[in-house]
Length: 232
Length: 291
Image 1 (cartoon, each protein chain N blue to C red):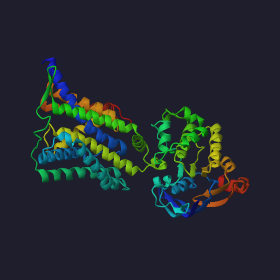
Image 2: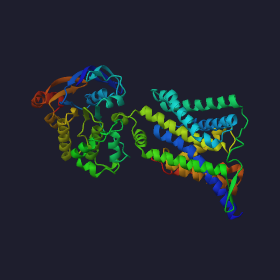
Image 3: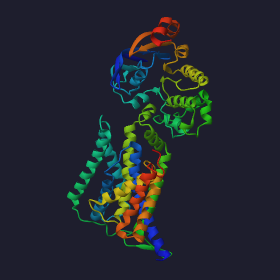
Image 4: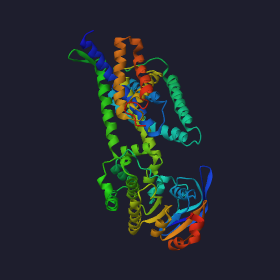
């Protein structure tokens, strides 16, 4: 579904990705793990069209490079960014509805049901401003907003960051449910154990290069990996 | 000085204030959306006034009939200014703020020069219209019809802008203003939103221009006078706040009228600038500003 070949990208003048190649098949959950500064966020931004890249990025056989970011979203590639990037002064409802802004037709607001079934608390908070939500609720809203675009490919950048431990499980459980609906997921996470538990495969990124890849269970079991690349 | 006379002046200030408010609304909308001060805003007003004057002179059509065509023309002009000039100014890597200032400032000088070249620098006025030289008597207060109509049209235009704000497009404008990068994540083309924002801002000042042309002289420099007041209005009301522009416009209209009455007509703008300085010193984000 998604194929990256020799992708390099600079971020703030530093070479953040160096010749990254990776592949995600339809229906998979793929995790990208690695220490801070390994290039995980730049990798997602490259796919989403938010940083200039070299190399090839293909989604369903179509090149995403040089497409403006909003077009990539319209193709069905959605990203829940680092820091969530909600519209703080708009209501929860407006944040969600705007997710369907580029959609047309009678079914454009259909994902509301899904979002409410995944995150019932959002339904209680519809009229509230997004900035008044707790960190965990904001993350739910960010995922909800991304789902409103009806993506076929969903990228999540550190969804557990800045969230109470109790809610981390809820959010990761939601990822599994989203996958069950046929959405392919690329997950960037610093929490190695939790991310590998819900992923099929994983890539380990270190200083902009992929140093290891394989089934998530193997990577989770590999002590050398954990010590050498993830400092655990 | 009688109460009637005071009321007479107050009503005049109110109606002028509504025009100031509408001019400021366009400026504030663009500023709020893109953080760009449009230094050519007054020149857009001037263009709308000349457009009204020229069509009236050539065809004899009443200015009121030109309201919608001129607003549409200014909308198109606003969109064109964004695509041809501002989008490029936004894409520069260094000193973006300076580039934007110089682009709109340069546009202002160009438009002013073009008007002077085309129409000469003398004052013109639309001397005959449905409303010209008519007043109505409201319990001893004489209200000139052109000003009254201008005030009402301004209120309608504000109602329109508030209504747009409540639509899905209005929400998209607000979202773009809050996070211009993040809107791409929901498939919104920010260039399109910016262009439409410029269109709306220019259309608002276009409406003000048509109405103003029914009772105010037209000259290549007319924009400068009103733009200066608009900057003060936007600063007072709060950058990016439509409601703030409305309240501040009314306030400035009143302050100006009362300063002229109570102190000295030639000092009518002093009161306004005193308020401006007070805002800068005590509440720099303005009365209703969120930025």
